[in-house]
Amino acid sequence: MVWRALGALLLALLVLPQDAQGQAPWRLDFQHEGLQRVNLRGPHGLDVAHYYMVFEVSNPGEKEVPLAIYFSLETDRSARNQMGGQMVRDLGTAKVIEAVRAADGSRDEEREILGRSELPRTLAPGDKVTGVAVFGPLDKNADGFTVDVLGLRDVIVTRKGSDSFEKTARRIQFARPGDSAGADRAPVKLVKESWVLLSDSP
Image (cartoon, rainbow, N blue to C red; front, side, top):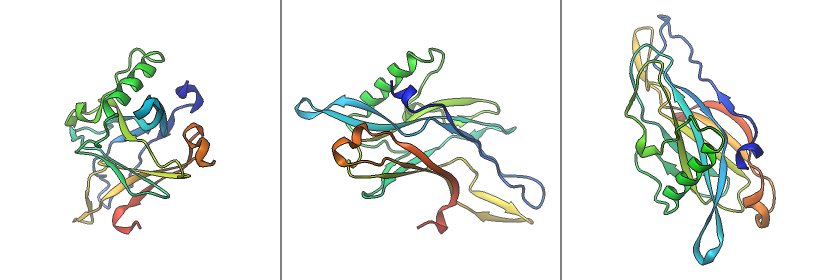
């Protein structure tokens, strides 16, 4: 099964630096299970590999915060495939979510995986939610994938009494070496995770 093949849960706990007053902006903790795939029957009876990421978001703070997470995926060969306030217009999206839920149910009957449109608008202190971001079919010739996750930190940061706007993302990079003939069956491996300030990003 795809779950066993990709190994243990990849954990990315978000730790923010304190500002000059010793107070950090709100944040959400984020965990993910890597970039995975599910094969669905496509046109002409051929299987098509759709890629997705199961994630968990929790609120470690003391106040309710907005839950407006935005995902984007970029390959080393193709344009940006975005998923946020508007769903990716992929006819396989609903079927992918259904397939992901079916696979997860055989592993963890207690967990409920929500599609992007089903996520709550806010997250109360101590609460957590599990969702799935669907990216659809990707370029078979691509060897690298970069996923940016936005909405995990407050964009208004206060330091020394002054407010500044900082748009940051959790950047998760993956590699899928191999030739195009077997690309949809090649494992996708985690390479690196880091925080990026998007205004300074290429």
